[in-house]
Structure formats: C-alpha cells, structure tokens
Image 1 (tube, each protein chain N blue to C red):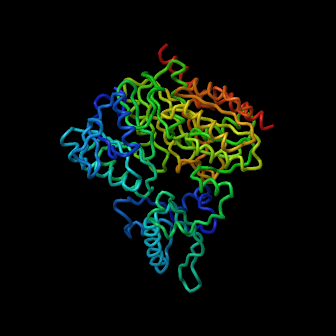
Image 2 (spheres, one colour):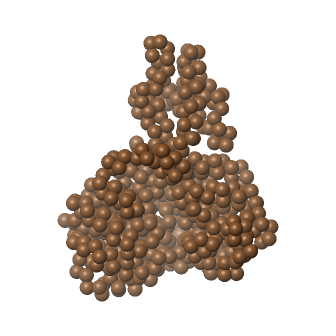
Image 3 (cartoon, rainbow over the protein chains, first blue to last red):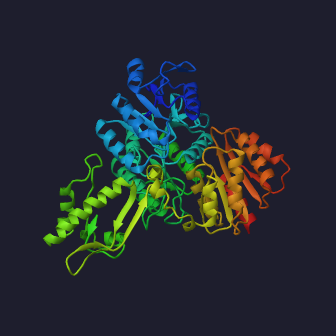
Length: 293
Length: 265
C-alpha cells in the first residue's frame, strides 16, 4: 500500500511551468507518477509536454480528478496556493516551496488539520513510494522497493541513509520528508502512525535533528502506540546552542532541542539510535533481518 | 506565558516553579480575545484590579505586535509596577522571522551587519549558508541535515569542525568557489572536508565543479572530497585523475572525516 503517495495518486502541480517546477514535474512523471495537471494562472490552455495546464486548481480538479497537489511556487505565493488547493478539494498537499513565514504556516496548519488534509512541508523534499509514485525532488534512482519506512526532517540526509540501505540490499516502502521548518504540515507522529498502519512497512527509520521537541514527542508515541520497530538517527551533536544550522527549525534553545536529549528520549522508548548515518542503516538492516527471521 | 517571577530567565521559572508560569495557546485563526488574557492574568495569580486592567491592555498589544511583525518571540521581562501603580515594560526581547522580512522592510533595515562575525557576513553577502565554529576542519556539504551530520562525524573522528556550511541543493562551480573562499578565510582552518551526496545533481558534474572551483580560487589547504550517490564512481575517477596534489578523494563519510582530521593535525 505504501503511504501518502502511491498508485492512487493523481497529481496536480502548482507552479508546473517554472524552471524548477517543470523540471521536477517531468521527472516525477517519468518515474511513473500519474501527473494529471499543472496550474499556472494565465497559462490555462497550454500544456507542459502533454500535461494540461489550467488557470485554477478548481478547474484542474474538475477536469482531471486530481487528488494530490505539489506546491512549487515562490514562497510569497505559497500560502495562497495551499489554500487554493485545499478549497478545490485536494486531499494531500506537498509543499516543496521554502521560505514560508512561520505565522503564515501556523494559520495554514490550523486550516488544513480539521479538514483532514494530509500536508507535507513546507521546505521538504516530498514523498517517494518506490515502484509507485514520486512527488517532489527526491532522487528516486538511489532507492529501491522494500519494507522500510523512512521519515526525515532533512533531504540529503535521507538520501544518504536511503543509499546506505540500498547498498545493504534493503529497500523502502515510502520515504517521507516532513521538512526542516519550525511549523510543518505533518509531524513525525503523523507519519509514524501511518507507517504503523501500513501493511507494506515492517521497520521504520526516523531521521531527526536538533531543535524543537518533535523527536521527544515521537519517542513517547513510539513507546505507547507502535508495534513495529523503529531505528533512529539524530544530526547535530556538535552544534553549538543558539545558532540556526541551515534549517530554520534546527536551533538549540537553552537546554532544549539538543541531539543528546533526543537520543536519550528515543532510547528510553526502545529506539536504537545510530551515531552516524552508516550505523543507523546497519541497525535498520539488523532489525529488518530480525523481523524476517 | 505570564509569570510574576520576572527578572530571571523564563526557562528557569519553567523548570523550578512551573506552577508559577501561566500558559495559554491562542488559535491563530480565532486570533487573540481578551478572555484569553484574563485567564492568563488570573492563572498567574495577579489580584490587584488596577494591575489586571493594565495587563489586559498590554497583553493584547503584545499579541498584536507578535502577529503583526511576524515575530518568533516577543518577551517583556521584567514588567514592573511603579510605586504609583503603573505597569511598565523595563526590557524586552524580540526576534523576527527571517522568512517574513520581505513583508517588513522597516524591520529588515534594522539588521546590524556588525552583530555577526565577519566570515558569516561575507558568506551572507555571497548567498552561502555559513556558521562559524571553533575548530580546524573546514566543512562544506550539500543539505543542512547532511552538513550537521558531517560536523558530528568529524567530532567522532577526534577533530573539531571549523564551521557549518551548506551549499544547498546545487553544486555549481561559482557556489563552490564562494563557499571555499569563505571557509579558507578563517585563519584557524587547517584542512577542508567537502562532503557531497549527489542525488539529482550527478556527482560527476559536481566533480567538474570542484575542479573548476579549485583552479579559480587558488586554495592552499588540503581538501578531502567524499563523493557518493548518483554516478559516484565516475565523479571520483574525474577527481583522482585531475593531478591536483592537495586533493584527497574518499568513498565514505567516515573515511573522509578521518583523513580530514589527520590532515588538520
């Protein structure tokens, strides 16, 4: 079944005609994702290599039955694009765009949640279910099909760990990037709950980093609610307090948000945590082997 | 959050006397309503009606300021009562979301370029994400998470990272030149570890970018490059055959980190 994106995904891309947007839209389609439409106001009636472009998401949904939208517009238009998608009946919103103001995202979060919308991002690489669908910028060629769910706040770190899993002969059910911003549409817990319910996922690898308390909350959830084994990795043990490390959300505030604190919280709930991406992948391989045996 | 235990760090109050810290969540769609402030005021145990009235006004304004300026933090500490019974702010701390500065040009202008180390200033001018640290191994990579992880691996290898530096998704030659110049401008740096995972950007293209950058920048430091991902073997071959004697190519993060730490000694 995989989670969030799969064979049932019918994708509309908001901002499909931009330079980055068109590159990734075609890449996603080449992978096998059912890309049914693009939306760029003022370009309705055109097409992107055969993908019809509409002026509004509402039209795209009416004409094509799109159920998932990928947001590839510049940051200052992203909030509008997200609301437009949700109001047009889109069920899953994947926001690749980065640079959304946190207050904007707080309002969006409180708008989409009660409507039962699944949202990933902003500032995320998207989601890939190998062999089924790729929505976003994840380089699909380094992953293969398998039974390990992977959820991460970081893009390249996800690729790194996925690559190591592939080299160990393992594959993934779905790879989910939740994004590195302080306020994101889906938390670790939201994604862990879906992996727990997914019959194609046997083991989950959770890749966290400094800042916030989402890894600690996820640790509690894993202890209380999950039957599937989870392996962790946390980046930022050597990050100094008070400095933002690239991702807006990656900052140690006072004694909160440290990598040590997150590692301890996870280990207290039975999650084995690798000290390097390589070790995390090896632990996942070991745990996956034990699940099979 | 509201507490009568002012003048000290709020984190300390939260830890030592959590019962003295009244907290409230405001639904951003509902927005601020005065009853929320009343709950905070009663919750913090403020009993004087005159103080309650003034606080109600201050809390409303503080929330408006928080939302209106896209602040990440708005703190008044300490908030005092004068002998005449007036409630006054004595000090405040205020941080604004970088992502929202485009909406607030007046606030953006207040940024004091002198407040960040010169290396970070130079990096910002060139569009490189750079944070100065206190070690000898300069670090450069693509993606914030991977770079953070690289700092950790350098530390595990017994070295000290000199900086955090994220090239972002791309690996074009000019971006690499800018980043290498910023990193090598730090006099503490003894070696540079360039950790690249190529996804959509193929690593053979990154390798050509690195060589172009080295030719243009004239860096003297030994540079360890770890290239992995799409087309990694081709990328490593290009680097190995380049004849650059300051360039060391390693296949994994850990081997790369060990080498860079050794070269920094």
